[in-house]
Length: 125
Image (cartoon, rainbow, N blue to C red; front, side, top):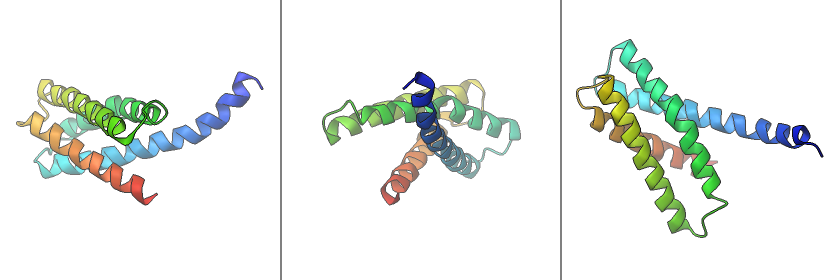
């Protein structure tokens, strides 16, 4: 079996999963941003860009952890660590780009909502 034959089924499986996670995250975090008073279209576009930057990396890392960690506590400790890094990166983006008067609150609440919805969807699937 050559590399292309192996890679194609993997990509056909993983791309829809990553796309679903990204679309779900963008939707949830835009709802949170709007509910916290972010109305400017440019600011909302930055929220989307932050998700495009951070979400695929976070999903990749947390997906890869399933094969590496030995128990649930290790897995969730790693997930929390990844999410804290995402909160820091997005909060910094929101602060530098002046997306919100409360960039850290926006980052924390939007990521808490996004992770909660993601866990809920994961348990329902």
